Structures are given as structure tokens and as C-alpha cells.
Image 1: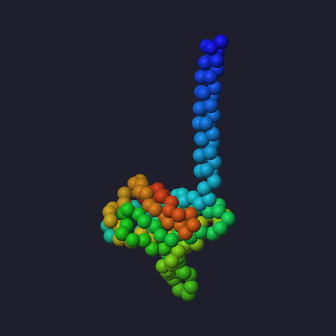
Image 2: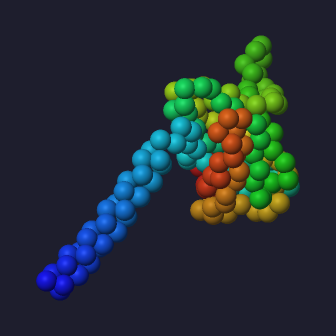
Image 3: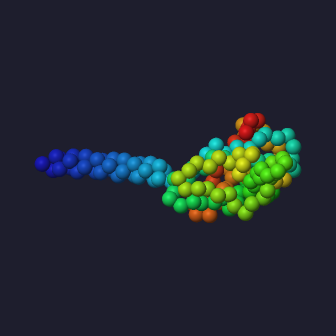
Length: 155
């Protein structure tokens, strides 16, 4: 009788541990799916020069019910960054520095050369095609998002 109780107790414990592990896994998966703001496809062009300015392009999906904004970006391979937009008034399009980049709610925003983008100023090193770096993108509401940035010949 004692052997049966011990066997059942051991099985119950293993089952309980398994259920806790599955529950934790499901909770973490649901939490990742519930992230209201996601940064993907972050990239900069490759360059053989040091001390130049390069655009940082990316895709931002904001599934939150409120708009957000990019306040700043910090990357290890640039001394500074500026947020820009491109004005299309009379004549040629012109870049203009702005305080923040708006990220509307329930939309995907594509940062690109001819629209909103971040300029990384005074690069500290050559950027080789295929390299990856982590940059910190600071949002007004979503906080700081560590983002992997890929160096590419064709950003």
C-alpha cells in the first residue's frame, strides 16, 4: 500500500512540475504576442568610411491603443543620432531635424530615407555587410527597446 502511495505521489509531482512548466511557457508566449510595440527590420548601409552620417531604417508596429513616439536612439557605432523627416515643398526634397518621430496607434510605421528616419552621425568604425549591432530605441510610452540592427549593402 505504501509503495502505491509513493508511486502515485511521485507521478503527481512529475505531473505538477510538467503542468507548471507548460503554463509558464504558454504565459511567456502570450506575453510576447501581447507586446504592443515591436521594432523589426532595423538596418544601416555598409560603409568603408569612418566619421560619416548614415540613415537607420526600421519597421515599427504599434498595436497599442495610444500613439507613441521615438525620442532618441543610441547605437555603439555612432557618436550621435538625429530624428529627421523629409519635406517636399517647392524645389528638391529637404531633410529637417525633428524632436520626435510619431508612431500612430494600431499602425505599422516604416522609417525610410524619403520620410521619417534616424540619422546616425559621426560613425566610429567601418560597417561591414552582414554585421549586426544592438541599438537602443527610446520611445515616449513603450520605453527603451533593444533592437538588433543589420549592416546591409542594400538598406
